[in-house]
Each structure stands twice: as structure tokens, then as C-alpha cells.
Image (cartoon, rainbow, N blue to C red; front, side):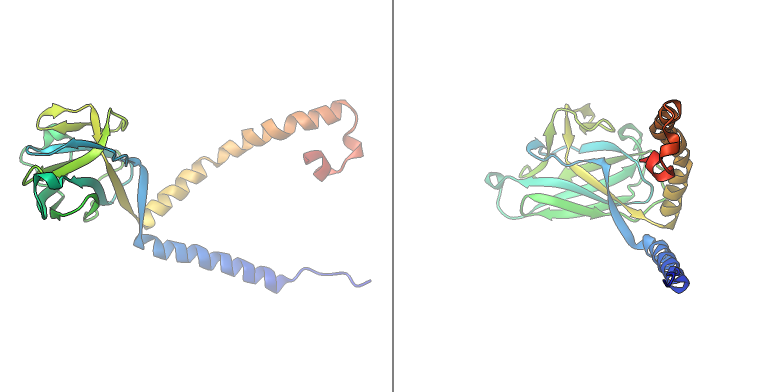
Length: 227
């Protein structure tokens, strides 16, 4: 009988492919924009306000390099036909700390229909946990800012002028996932690998002890004992 030997060239090719895929991921990671589901509140069933005065929302960016913000807007055609103007500004900081602060992003929009509107942001190096504020100012009362009544997003506060609202504006953030973010995620994953040891001990040690105490360990090989 011919003994089948493992194919060393195939094993090397497999390792090369894995390395190629890993390096490709590293090089392409700077081109990826991802949504941060933890920095979002995308329920848009209620009209939060028609911002004659500044209407805003504070939030906490869980990820660095914020590069986009989406807000949900409505249009009340009974208040006027055609497009209406809206200015949206994004600030790095809490709502009460914005005096004299320049916005990190600003967009002058013409709203002709209801729906989500995305504002591009030049990625800035704010650290994770940075508090940000989005402000909106409409040119007329036909523009509606959408969201939900009642506070559901725990990372921030909606407000009109200087008054807090029992509501949340509908918004969603995106961030640039670059090489540094990939390395940080890999380091974070590696730091949690030690949890595998107590988990494995919890799963396997009681069974092995039971087999040993019952005198049955000699009847099973290592694979059968693990199963």
C-alpha cells in the first residue's frame, strides 16, 4: 500500500495566500468607510422641530476619524413649495462649549423632499470618546428635523436653542477605518485572548475529571475525551 504523504507545496501556497489576503486587507484598510452603529439613532418617525432657532444634538464619537454624518429631514409642502435652505454644522465639543469655536464641517443644503441627507466631514484626529455637536438652522418653517420623541440615545442630548428636549434627532455617523484602526483592533483582540484559557478550563476540565474518577479515561483516546 502506498502511503500518502502530505503535499508540502500545497501547504506553502495556502500560507502564501493567507499572507496575501492579510496584506491586502492592511493596504486597503485606509480606503474603507464604516458605519458606527453605537453612535447612531436612526428612528425618524416624529417631527422634532422646525428649527427657526438652532436645533441640535450632542453625541459621543466612539471611533476616531469621523468622516460623515447623516441626518433625516422632512418637508412640509403646506408651508411652501420648492426647495428650502438648511445649514448643518458639526462641532467638536459639547453644546455649551461652542462660543467662538469654528465648525469642523458645514453644509448649506437645499431641501426639496424628505429623506436622509449625508454631510461629508474631513477626517479629523479626535480621540475616541470625543463629544461632538450637530447644529441645524433652517431658512423657513417648511423644513422638518426628524427623530423620535423620548430620549433613547444615552450618549447625548437634543436641544432647541438653550433648552434640552425630551427627544432625539435621527442621525448616523461614519468613520474612516484606516491602518491605525486595524492595528488597534488587532491589539484589542489579542489582549482578550487570555479569556480562552478559563473558558477552555470551564468546558473541558469537569468532563476529564469525571472520566478519571469513574476510571473510564483509559477507554477513550484524546479526541474522544475532548468530545
